[in-house]
Length: 514
Ligand code: ATP
Image 1 (cartoon, rainbow, N blue to C red):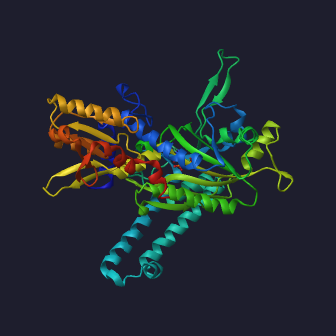
Image 2 (cartoon, helix red, strand yellow):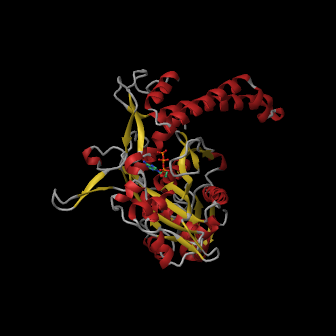
Image 3 (cartoon, rainbow, N blue to C red):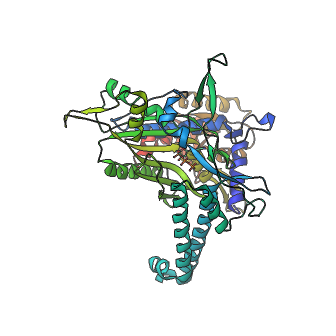
């Protein structure tokens, strides 16, 4: 596929054409940064959620799940700091009238310099072949060193303006770097302003008695306020975790990257409650465990990198992002944060209730520290989907569009195809096979068009197996099974189908790779 922009456009149009993601309220021309999951999308999303839940909750005997409400008492958001500090710095370009996040403008600028370094390294690698020493090149080449210094200077200034919330200095940084608006190409910027990302709403029938509420901007707080309820009723011993998946809402300033940044999205979060002082060790543990989970899906080791935060949020003493190579570059997919005892202490202070743990081994009370893993389900969907979409050149000079979704996540595991749709016996046998397989897998029936076209359709849909029923099947109870990725075909017994499919789609087989 030609370039990243084209690739991303193809991802979006494929998601629509094959029933994965639609724009919300499309008949009314849509709603910005809000999307609906269609018939295939909902299955893929559910499978990703289940894959996470299995790895986090079911496989860990010290992690349990909850499902807290989206509405929470408004004091929650005072205590958590969201009312006062859940802001993004925004800046407008006066010529294009486009609005940007000031930090994202600077980060994108910095990323471009990094790309230049990587290009130089790749070029040198090609030129010098086996004799190339990358570390030496990076530490001695003049251009690389100059660019690296630029990157370090930008990072230092960005951290400083963010830490001090110095909006004038923020604007100055953008001006000094000569950043131009991608739309108008001009440097005609407004001042930088802070913008709160929470959506407000009202609870109650009459205007006078109504209570101001927020739609939760993260699921984490539902876990913190339930910490003691879960600990006591579940008789949980530290260390233990509480996981949940659910909707979160943010009035994002810039929202033009399809389901990467939405105003209504879903998070999968886990708060791990630990003994104060052990956070370094657990931070390391969860960093490794979460990366392993990602790698188990086989999207390619090179597509992930850690980005340790220089600027820590007010509640954190360490933080890293797992970044993924999306079609528009490396971006945050998951955050891992060491949140100290900030949240529980804040809820104690605002509620006046003790949220402490009695440690029988130490015979002491303390407020646990918290290690958080937080991943966006929609971003994970985009990572999986965009990575899977490929156009392959075939031997006969044709191309095929194939969605190489990890089989464990694919919405439909197998399509059953009678070779000839007018042959009633073939149709009957196909339907019998479906009746048998549907207890274990999501399967579909497809009889329209020549079988080659049906294969292509299922390839583009991401279905790992096509099972073709033909005249021979009626005689010897065998069928042809075709594998999506290799296009290899095998003749197998109908009785063996279940085992063959299970081996490829079973969650255990995939998670065991962790
Ligand atoms: P970003 O810097 O990209 O705005 P964030 O650091 O604010 O993200 P967190 O608050 O750490 O994100 O949220 C945890 C996860 O939730 C993110 O890693 C991301 O996968 C997901 N997420 C956050 N905001 C959005 C959004 N607007 N749309 C979709 N997913 C989101």
